[in-house]
View 1 (cartoon, rainbow, N blue to C red):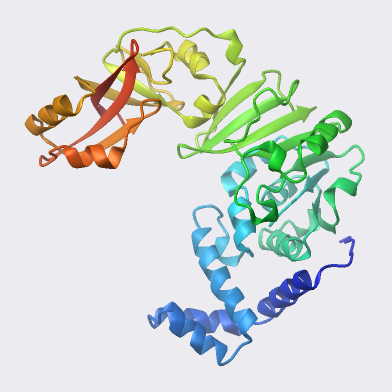
View 2: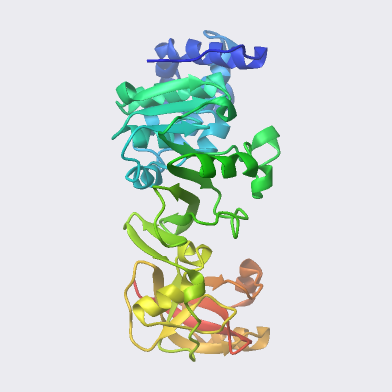
Length: 398
């Protein structure tokens, strides 16, 4: 397994040393588990562990244990994986990574590989060179490759990603969105490496993918590419820019996981069809909304918009689609405090979910104003219809 070494800062060396000490010390994990089973608090656990192990190793194991627990919904082998806080928070979840990996059918370079989530998913099928400039992060990625049993197709490379040459191999790029510890960046101009490098990769490489935040300002920036918005359990997780031989024909795609349903199209090919509120109202999946494919979905499944400024859709007959959640309309109330209080005082709701998109609503404050002492569960969708804000009282169809 090839690896390129380069001089590292003292702080980076300290992190690597601590990681290696922790990995070579299985007894600290056993002791931590025993203390947790005894019900010891966090402070007591650290005090007990420090009597037997170095402070840096104790801090590392406590943090790792916390991150492994948090990672359980995200990774099937979280209990054995290696993370630091930034690496965990920026890592692609396993379900999304596996979905993306299906497009990579020949050797691939994963640039800015982090703790290795995307590289590991791709390495299930093809050889991967995982590149990162941080030695401790790369070490965690290498160990995680062993956790998933793909180490024979996983080559870690310690290097500045802007200096490596992947040749004709495919590439996957996950730019650092937390460079300089300034918080999570949304603007592509704040990514590291930034737009100039990304544009150069698109122009010079045969094909690949760039991982972006779904909230990033990608609109109008990747001509000739396919931008796939990916949601998982109703939360938009990622915007993937596919380019070269890996790009599809449509400029935008929305994919809903775990169902695996996908819809592709050009938002400019569809005009909004607006109709009055029918018996059912639909809340499109956030991947559909962020991809600009609300009108494409409406055409696909025969729905209409309530208003050209709203993404909510409607119909008189129930349509089942993985791309939108359906609600049966029970009533429509003017969006005014007096009208809403009067309606819910006479109704029998005990639980009320409040949803909105473009009408500003403080859901907690509104809920406190309403009398909800019944037994029914309902939903209040605040939306514009013909330019006017209305409260649509409904119940879930699923």
